[in-house]
Length: 209
Image (cartoon, rainbow, N blue to C red; front, side):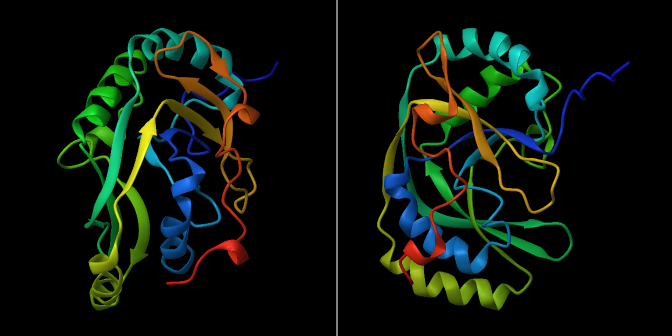
C-alpha cells in the first residue's frame, strides 16, 4: 500500500513570478551573486514549503475560490534591502512596492492553507521580497550595492496570476511551473499557458553588469 504524500515539501512552493520581460536586470545580478540561480526563477515567495504536486487536485480545490475573490494588482521593484539568514549569511533582495497587496494576498491564502505558515513565522512576520544575492561577506555585498543601486531602474509589472512550482528529487533539479492560478478567475491554467514556465533564461543571453 502506497503511503500518502506529505502535507508539505521543500520541493514545492507557491510564488509570484514577474513576467519574463523584466527578468534581464534581475538575472544579471542573480547569475553572479545568487547560489540558487539555477534552481529558482525570479520569484516572490508566498508559501514555502508547500503541498507536493501529488496533491494538485487538493491545491486546485483550495486555491480556486481564493483566487476568484482576489483582483490583479501592480508591483514595482524599486529599491534594494537585505536581511540576515542564519549566523553568517546575508540575503540581498529587491523590495516589491507597495507591499500591502502581497501581505493581504498571503493572508487570504493562509486561511486556505493554515499549516503552510512557515514564512509567516519568521521574525517580523511575512516579508515580501525577491532575492537577488546571498553573501557571507558584508563588504562584498556593499560593493555590489554601490555599483548597481545608483543606476537601478525600477521594474513595474502586473500581478495577474500565482504559480504553483515544484522540482524533482534530484538536488540539481530546477523548479518549474506546474500550474498557474489567475487572480479574479475561477479556473487554473496549465504550465504552458503563460511565460515563466522555464527555470531561467540561458546565462549566455543575460546582460552583464
